[in-house]
Structures are given as structure tokens and as C-alpha cells.
Length: 264
Length: 68
Image 1: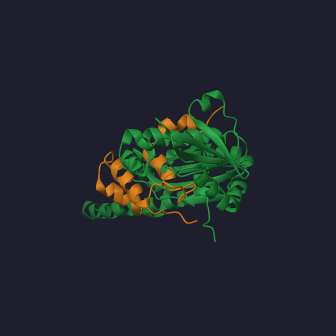
Image 2 (image 1 turned 180 degrees about the horizontal axis):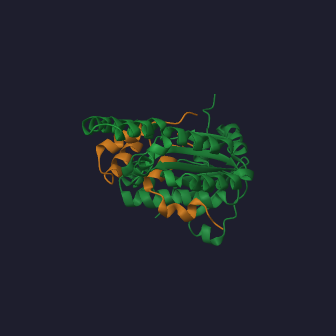
Image 3 (image 1 turned 90 degrees about the vertical axis):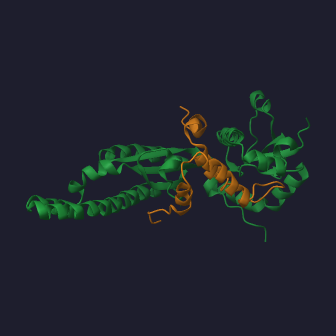
């Protein structure tokens, strides 16, 4: 089968060391202007517009190829600064890829300089509301005061107040999640160059029992990564008894901090 | 110590990876690209792994509670 389409993984700031192992996977580095573009020749039968579209609905294919996309870029990232491309970016010829690189070379260079010596880290914070709820009287004066009132009330009144407390607990937990989330966000923000807030993901998506309260991505200078990781550990221990959990992953290729401007 | 995402990607869900590789990076270039409509179809396909339509709605509406 002839592999005639060019699948682009990323741009690398320096010539990547493609060892035999990597080359046997079909990866190739093309040089245009000062950019090293990591590509792979792929077949029409898999990656033509129509076939790619069909393959996208094949979960197994999608899973394999998406992980491959991340794996290749991460591997190059270990050696140099990279600009990651969106999954499934394909050129029909080296000329057409070359034209893109030349047209956008200023913007590409700006991006390379911007993400140089920096790492992308993902921080997701979860709250187990059951655990938090059990300690609500210690964390919320309002809730503690209401509890006192319940204890001192007749059974009938206590019943009504308990119902009131159920609502109060939910509101107080929302408030606490926001406050803790904000505190975590700020701690990491202080150690990073830039950040991006993503939508909170529902439980079906995360496969976790607890509730996501923060979904952020940070661009961290390599000199601060150690502090960033220490902060993860510190916060993880500080509030784990309250039901908070920090899930941090990285370094990712800087997907979230690349911005290629349309040519004027 | 290799503590990067290559080693850990097995633990990371496809949906989370998709969120990065489909919506971010160098986008809208190439002779063949996955269009916004295609991306919706991808999520629609992956949705079969999720339990409910509400989940998709939550995904789109789950705005951050934190202030930048």
C-alpha cells in the first residue's frame, strides 16, 4: 500500500533524535524554514477525509490513534520544545505543508519561544461531599448554630429545623467547595506563567464517585515544576480529611497554550 | 524517574485525551482536518460509553465555579 498522505504530530525546535526504534514506526522529521516538523506518511485508506471521518466513529481505532498522537509528541517533547498539532491534521503533500509553515512562520516562532522551558500541567480537584458534609458543623458557624438550636428544640420543631439544615448543608458545601477550589487555583496560579479553566466534568465522564470542583490547566516554568509538584503534595495532605482530592497529570505537550494567529 | 503522561496515559480516559487533542494545539490547518461537526460526532460516538444524555449536557454546561 502506498502511504501518500502526511500526518503531522508536532513542530520541534531542534532536530529530534529519531533512533531506529522510532524510525521503524514510520516517523520522519521534515525541515522547513527553521522548523522541524514531525510527520508520518499514512495511507488514504485510513486517513483520507472520508475514511478518517468513518474511522472516528470506531472507538478502538480512535483510542489507539489518539494515544499514539500523544505518545509521539510526548516523546519528542523529552528532547526539545514542541508545538503540538490537533489530532488528525493531514497534508496532501510536503509542498502544501511547507506552504503552511512558511505562511505562519512568525506566529509559530512566537509560540515556540513562549512555551520554551515550560510544561503544561493539568490539575483537577474533587470533593467527596459525603465526607465534607460529615464535618460541616466544624467548618460552618451557621450550620453549627443551627445544630445547637435543633438540640435545644422540641421534637416537632427539631424536625422542621432538620429539614432546614439539610438545605443549609448543601449551600454551605457549595460555598466551601468554591472557597477551597479558589484557594487551590490561586496556589497553582502563583507558581505558573499562564492558566486555562476548563468545564467541570460530570461523574460519568470522570468515572469517580466524588464531584469535580476545579478543572484547570497551567503552564509552568521548568524551574518551578519542583515547587509545583510539592504544592500538589502539600495540598493533597492538607485537606484530604475534609474530602478533597487533587489529581494532577503532566507534563503534557502544551496543547492548551498554543495560539496560531490567522495571517493578516 | 519518568513521571510523564506517556507512562501514565493508560490511566487517562479517552475522553480526557480527546478534550486536549481535538480542541487544542495547532488547529484549523491542514488539507484534511477534523471539522467542528466531526468533533461533535466523535463525542456523540464516545457518548455511547457514557450512561446518559444529561451527561453530554453537563459536559457542555459545566462552567467553572472558580474566578480567574
